[in-house]
Every structure is written in C-alpha cells, then in structure tokens.
Length: 628
Image (cartoon, rainbow, N blue to C red):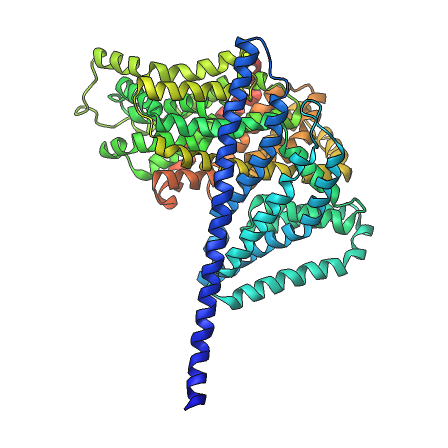
C-alpha cells in the first residue's frame, strides 16, 4: 500500500516541481523585462529632454551646454542595451522565419529551443570579455564630465547578463524538458567540437570567411536565429577559432558601432512616428488627401501612396508609417471593393518607395557608417521617392481604369479646404524638420526633439488628442525597436571589421573595380547584390556590413556618394518588401491584418514598377544630386 502510494505520488511531485520551476522562471523573466522596460523608457524620455534643452540653450540662449552630448552618449549606450533586453524579452529581435515556419510543430519546437540556446551560449562566452572591456575603460575619463568611461562601457556586460537571464528563463518555461536538455546539450557539444577543432582553422586563411561569415551566417539566419545573434555568434567563432585577435576587440567594435551619437536619432524618430499616430496628425493628413483624391478612379490608392510619402518624412520608421496609415485607409478602401491582397501589396510597395525620404533610419545609418553628409542624404532622398511614386501611380491607374466611381461623393472645394486647414499643422512638420537641419538650428540627432515637442503641442492644443496613458507603452516600444536595430548595428560593425582585417575588402575592391562596364557595370551589380541582401538581411544590417566596403569603390569610379546611396537604399527596399523572404512584406501583412498569401500575386506588378523607377534613378544621377 505504501509502495503503491509512493509510486503514484512521484509523478505528481515531479510535475508539480516542473510547474513550480516554470512559474518561477516566468516571474523572473517578467521581472527582468519589466525593470529593463521601465529604465529604457525613462532613458528615452531623458534623452528627448536633454537634447531639446541643448537646442534651446545653444540656439535661443546662446549658451551651449558643453556636457550635454557627453551625457547623451553615455545614456544612449544604456538605452541601446536595455532596449535590446526588452526586445529579447518580447521576442522582437529581427529574424527570418520564412523557412523555420514551414516546419511542423515538433520541428518548430526544436528550432525555438536552438534559437534560444545559441544566443545564451554566445552571451555567456562573450560576457567575461565584456566585463574586462568595461574594467579597462575605467582608465579613460570623459573630457567634459570628467568621469570614467566605464560608466558607459558597463552597459554592455549588464545588457548581456540580463539577456542571458531572459534566455535561461525562456528555456525553463519550455513545455518539453527533453527538447531543452537535448537543445542545450547539442549547443554545448557544437561549441566543444569547434574548440577541439580550433587548430584546423588558422591554416585555411580566408577560406574561414566562407565557413564562418558566409556559410555560418546563412545557416544561422535561415534557421530563424535573430539576425543580431547570427552576426555575433559567427563573428565570435571566426575571431576565436581562426585568428589570434583577442575576443576583447570584438566587444570594442560592437561598442563603437552602437555608440555613434548620430544613431540617437533612431529611437527619437521612432518615438516621433508613434506620436504623430497617437495625436491624430496622421489621420488629419490622410483625411485631407482622401477628400482631394477620393472620388477619382483608384483615388484612395493614390492617397495611400501620398500619405506614406508625407508620413515617412516625419517618422523615419517604415513600421510606424504603415501602422499610422493602414488603419485609417483600409476600411474605406475595402468598402469600395478593393481586395485585401491588393491593399497590402500596395502598402508594401509604398514602404519600399519611401526608404529614401528623410528622416529615414537607413539614411541616418548610411551616413554614420560611411561619413557621407546626412544633410546631403536628406536633400538627395526626396526626388528619387517621387520617381518611384509616379511609377506606382501608373500601375494604380492601369489596375483601376474600369473602377465605377459614379456612387462616390465628390467632396466640394469648401470641404477640401477645411480638411486642408485641419491638416496644415501636420503637413508642416516635415518642412519644419528639414528647415531646422538646413538652417543649423539643430543637428540631425537633435531635430527629432523639435518634431516631438511640436507634435505634443499640436496634439494638446490643435487636435485635442493626447492620451497620456499611451506614453509609457510608446516609450517602451521605442526602446524595444531601437534596441533591436542598434544591436544589429553593433554586431554587424564587429563583423564588418573582421571582414576588413582579413583583407576581404581589398579583394572585393579589386574584383568590383575589374568588372566590365566601369561605373555602369558596378552600379548594375550593386543593384542586384543589394536587392538580394535587402531580402535576407534587411536594410540596416546590409548597409553596416557592405557600405564601408563599396562606397570607396564607387567613389573611385566617379559615382557621387549621394547618388550611390540612393540606388543602394532603393535596391535594398525592393528586396526588403519582396516575398517570399522580404520581412517588410510580412510586416505590412501583419499591420493590415491580411494573409500573406493574398498579396503575393498582386505585388509583382508594383515591384516591377519600382524596379523601373530604380533603373531611372541609377541611370540619371541628377535625380539624386540635383538639389544638393
């Protein structure tokens, strides 16, 4: 009787223990993520206030705050890492799941374990070097504040430790302990095997680039590993196994890539994009365009193209642009008979079209990694997007040439005028942002704070729509998206440095310079390459990896930096929003709440039009540099 009782009780105790472990892991993960989210939100708000005060002190009071940029840079590093922690907790790090999602339930469970175990292994392996790097930075003091640089560098080990804790918490919550144990065992065995095989790699020379930075990265990305960790893990393996370069150098390159103060524009413009949607500014702009064009054939499609152009000049974030426009236009477009697949196809195409409109995050990134003037990039990006927009309008005109608009009420001019007056404060924002940069009122980083303050005032005083309850979630969302982007930039910078140190850049330069056709041949190959890279890596990682290598070659061939930037950005946008691999296309589908299968057939006509526009931009440099 006793034996029977003990035998029956053991499984219950085991199951109870597992449930208890999962509950503890879940609470611990939520606590870590919650603390990181609150701190990251506070840092976003602090950066906005700090930079705006710097603008006022310098331009209005003529007494610049000499330590403002220094403090902003220190806080920015913490914002980047804590944002990456929040993104990790939310599962928001960019990844490619087109292939792993095709697996069955069991296969997807295995891949989820592996794509959590590999980041955990990387973080634990690099954490000691990150701590050592922070300790070494203690010997350097900042010029204005006079404090140790370790205050900034400490963000790296703290962020890595928190992400490692979240990874462990996630693994503890998996329903199948067997999957977790085998996944962890397989990852540990792979690491051990690579370390045992370490003597094999150094004699292979640059073949290691193909093994680790081409084959390894491709395998990791296609398996669904977050892109940042795919870059990081493969770079760590390359440096640690095939070179004598200390791993500590990788931490330094990551910190260097993430700490450019110009990149502070990324979270600030992301927040600005969320703000214009919350205050009703985006809705006012769309309403005006709809009253102007809604009664013509395909009118609301033209409105979608125009609205994305205008909103992109404010937010800089494609996801924010689409999230602001789609909920406003899609219901009315569906009511008029538009097919959901065509709507999401056009939304994706406009996302690709507007990649060059300032203040695009890709423009900011390309300026930070190549040294090209961001003000010049902002000026050069306006007309190429107009050319691509006209190509999309031609497709819309053809597709909707037989639409029956007899039942659609044409808005009287008085109504259009009233809508225009209501939208005027919102429509003025892109011009205010551009004028502030051109006139020297604020830097590219600071100008976003002017836009934020303007949007807050318009929301409170003009549109009377300002939900304070949404501010904290918006700040957290800003930190999460920014952390995901900045971690990619940091790891891609380390990977690009590894490529440069290997001599790959010299080999690539000789190969590209020897291409037939001179500048035209180089431009054609660049278009094909960046379309492919954009579909696999997304725009920002591809820019960070390859722009420092290819821009000097383009310059030697006589191609203007801004012209080449426009071509590469548009080519990457084409790949980013093209199925089946383009992540942007699936983002558009998620925002529009449309099944991705419904838009695949319709999108190819729009992509063909964008490609024609891209060829025109590549063939006619004046489109990009005519307004410089």
